[in-house]
Image 1 (cartoon, helix red, strand yellow):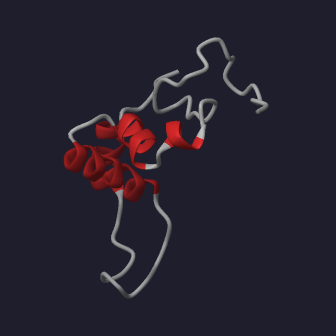
Image 2: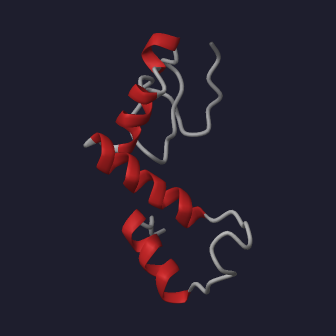
Image 3: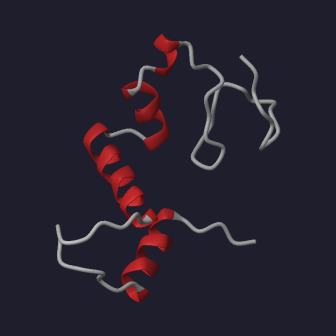
Length: 88
């Protein structure tokens, strides 16, 4: 199965997407906005998104050693199968 990169997802959104309304006239959730936000965070911090989020949200100081997003990057629990619930 092909795993789409962020760039591929944004390119497809631009190629096949249509504008729903003028800016400020309508709200609708879209994954593309989240993808663009990851670009902004990386650009402002100069770090990969997952590293920046761990630091910005103070994961270490809060004791979040088991908080992860398996689709975005590495995490503290290296021997955990995807989808396995983590208990604190």
